[in-house]
Image (cartoon, rainbow, N blue to C red; front, side, top):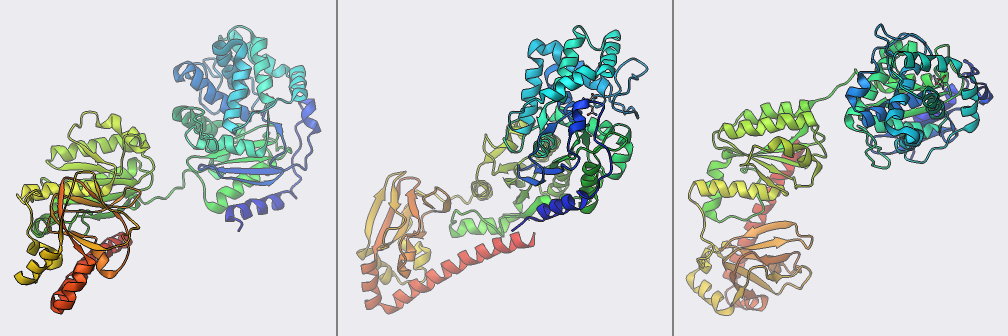
Length: 603
Ligand code: GLN
């Protein structure tokens, strides 16, 4: 099935292919040879999916589009201070090849020739003879492949680029371009002649839109700072003397080149690359502008026209009354949890977290906050958090502690990207607990509540058989008969008691110690304390569905199914009672699962 965006781009392509307005650039003789009918579109999403339409694989010279990426490289290699002190960021309101400088003799911005030549000069000062190689390879890292140079276009521009020479010497006069003016010009002419396709510039733009990380290769090409500042100058000056009109109407940071290309980058969403040689009077590709305009207006993609609902970052908000951990609790523990559930709070977060969503979370967790509350924030469904979001969250966690609450982070490991961003903000929060699994965090919180109310069970004191939930309501004689046909079993900590897939031939009654029911993958389904049974599904004839491990030294009674059958024959009532107890156990589990499903559906 064709994705809708593919249909849209294909349709744009056929609609605008009929527009023959504009003229191919001819001030560089070699460029005038371009076929005006060529028309290619590429679009790359920030998760690295690339759409293409028309001549998206036809190479053309990057020309001024290189200015954006070389500016990012200059910021990266020379640092912001060095670059920003030499090159301004004000729109010039003039054509790309304007010779005018600002009142203090700086290029207006890096998107016009003067600023771009200054950038090449800055890189030349740092990288010397390797400067062009550095530029070419960096453009290649933006595109995700090795890029060549069109030698004919390079010679053609070098032979005729006297206006750019004038600009470079003027910059030299003002100390912006240091020594070797010809060398700097050579770098600039070469960088303009790098060959790219519409697909390439889509990926390059998507890299800027993706905070400097190429979404196709995953490589961090430039820092988030360099990417954001590059998008800024593209926004204010990327379209020469059409920049104001462009940002007003289309609202997508973009950079065009006289080769007929345009790269447009929609932050955090996509990169668009269009190639079509005929240019308008401003030097911008006619069909390229049309595609950008159509995409922006059809899908309302103007950067400043945004809607979002911060509330969608909380997918569930509950306490342990409705959802407990997978650790089974004994009756008195359950009672304590039931009476004091509001001392816990579980807030499950979802999606990329930002300043705005964390700000919302900060208010939400303080509403209904009780003294001593255990507040679990679950990050399982959170792929990333912005630096601003992390900073604010750090403060929220600190405030919770100051208020007497216990914040707990769930769904985070030391290596998860969210934790990496968050960690520097948590440096002075020593009491913070972190659990990779939400279930473990909830169990820990339950333990705290049970502990607060003195309800801890001593798991090492053997529990009598008549305290087993499965044996509720049985007479002492029946219990005695049962224990006479059961075997006492002992296991060391870490031993496997039941193996998933094995036939079920017995039921276990846990008398002392703790066991955990786990899937072969290691995921815990439940933990049991004395007084509980496991392997009880054997009574229904199904094979072992999971592993059961001894967490501590364990003693249990194993009742073989053959023994149970014997009991049932001799005492039908006892057999029926066990089945009724089993049904009650299963019903309770089902109710708990339903509560969780309902909670997630309604939040
Ligand atoms: N190489 C071209 C020049 O400096 C680039 C200009 C452009 O693409 N607008 O004239």
